[in-house]
Amino acid sequence: MGKRYGAFALTVLVAVTATGCGGATPAAPARNAASGQAAPAALPSQSPSGGADAAPADAAAWSKWGLEPLAAAPAAPADKPIKLTKTGTVPVFSDVPTKDKVVFVTIDDGAEKDPKFVEMLTELKVPISMFLTRDIVKNDYGYFKPLQALGNHIQNHTVTHAIMSKSSPEKQHAEICDDQSALTQQYGTAPMLFRPPYGDGANTPTLNTSVQQCGPRAIVLWRESMQIHDMQYQAADKKLKPGDIILAHFRGPKDLKGETMTEMFAELLRRIHEQGFAVARLEDYVQPPA
Ligand SMILES: [Zn+2]
Image (cartoon, rainbow, N blue to C red):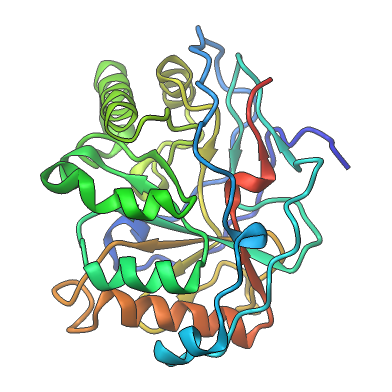
């Protein structure tokens, strides 16, 4: 318990998917990328509430969305399994070391801004983490504020969704730092986590250095990727594992063959429910820098 979650060699077997942000295989975390000057991340001021400590949604709310209630998540661990440091190389992780039967839902980019999804999350209180891309959300920053007010954290996902390994160090720096400042200004708290588009370049020293310089203190990948009706799994047995991080997107009918964001999310919750998992809040398992 409490050991540092540093650089982990994860075997990544995932097949390539055809859906944008999740289209690339997240590469295995690197060991000790180059060091660089680190800008300490601000402690998130967002409420840690939600998940286990939020009032559970009642059965009627789940029924309204055509769902069976998910198992309640256990209380957030007092001793966080992932501990972030103020300086130095940032860790890269795609799951959380825990025995709790929980998974974590992350939703990326921010293109679809469906009011029904806000209604759904308000009623169901399923915790999510949002990795937002400035140029995709800037036409309506306000959409994400009620989601944030539910206790959900906003994290960094670049300015233009650029492919990091094809970007110069200067461009990588600008993509991360400018998203960091825009999100901090809009949402009042500095993102603690960064996800590179497509998971690309996650293990390169250049990206690690840029992340350090811009403020986030970890690079977060994923294990499962939600498609329209089902998940794409990295494990050969196609089953969720405790601590898995799931990737989904703010996407609507145009990208989901006519399905809505709430239909996609309901399918995601069904896949989690049928495997007996609860959804916990990722940030409840991550210790910010002291
Ligand atoms: Zn993305």
